[in-house]
Amino acid sequence: MDQRIAPARPLARVMALAIGAGLLGASVVAQPAFAQQKPAPKAAQAQTPAPAPATPAAPAAPQAGAPQLPPLMYSSWVKLCQQGQETENKKVCVVHRDGRMENGMPVIMAELLQVEGANERLRVTVPMSIIVHLAEGTHLVLDGQDMGSSPYVVCTQIGCLSDYEINADTVKKLKAGKQLVVQTYLMNRQVLSIPVSLADFAKAYDGPATDPKVVEEQQRKLQEEMQKKAEEARKKLEAQQPAAAAQPKK
Image (tube, rainbow, N blue to C red; front, side):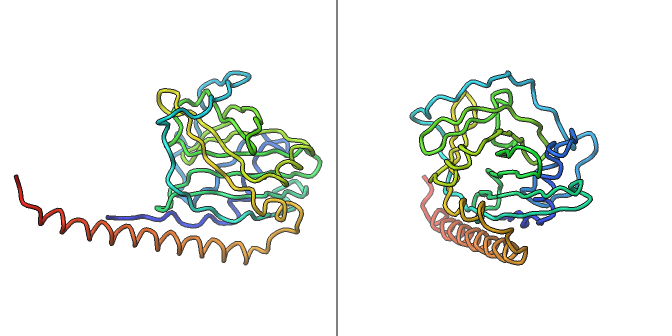
């Protein structure tokens, strides 16, 4: 079994999300930073999603038989900050966490965007391979409390972005919360719920910017863990193949 692990995302691309998030007066939304990839042809770099309703309908509670995600591997909450010409000399910080499957496939990215002089924004990114109904956008649930819905702002070859404007009260709830659930619609209007633990979110939010060396080390360890899981899956499959071949044919 050929398991390909997506490479760790460079820190510069994480910061590019905030710099190009439309919070600095620009209308362009930067490409999500799930993983480093080669630039797509110009015609495929950005796709505007189908028109979304002004107020997307809230997904219903997941029904019996709704698809379930396998356990995800998450990065730690980190805080990355930058200030310079790229940010119009404004301080930009991103409190960031993402989740992937064991084979490295990205599933969710959650970020709180802080731009000097602008309201804070909560952004979630879901890969297009998961999304079916673009017009529905995403829906957030924080520890069982409805946080509303938001349409997808833009889609690229990596994923679709959905933004939520938040206030101090929402930040307080996030810091005290246990789990944020991101919901999106699948086929037959089934709801896929993607959990994002808020453990250590408050620590990252209130603390100083994370040392880039620490972030790189965390990414390296996560990469090694994904490689280990992929190797275990490969060995398990190889062990099953001789057993299946040894069974008598009917």
